[in-house]
Length: 283
Image (cartoon, rainbow, N blue to C red; front, top):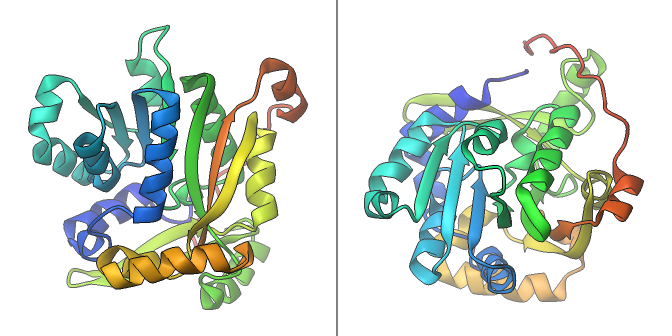
């Protein structure tokens, strides 16, 4: 893998830069999640939960029970300590690890009504094959008709300079098409991070390919999310812009999708893809 996502996010959370940039849930994204939760039931899986900015809102506003997983020990530690009372009651279950850890922790008949995978978590998974495996694993964890709400970054609006810099790494086989490396600077130094940037077409096709039926596609935001979640005024302005501007102006795409029935799913699922050898670390 080009960079260690676990190491990167542990440093990101430890620096408190994440909390400074994203102190609360995106209001428009949260509204979609709350709407879907009202339709779908009470068992929620929060994939890539971080230290809980969406889990916190769901615990405060709904009666949902939440399994929250993240690969960052620092994030899960923060989440567990901040919401210790909900952990003790069994309403919140923090898990350190990926979707395989979630699957192994559940009973044979335990399924989720709703999965949330927000703020580009899917796009932080390297590679394309592993993103597909993640979507297949989520599909297996959802009950029939269960839904997922997820967001990914729009390649047309994000990291243009980094996309240019990534071309040589893509040509050399260190990255795949659409991948970039970028940096976040904190008082503790620079954190190098990985992202896959999506076109709307690729996003929709990937979900359908792995057994989901699209119910809704929209903008996660039009303005950069760091501003939207830190400023009430910018949040309101963004809400107006997302209703007025074409989807190509989205900063990130948001999709609501449901598990396709077995007949439909067989049309979407491709033959198993061989896992490519891990590329060398980018210089």
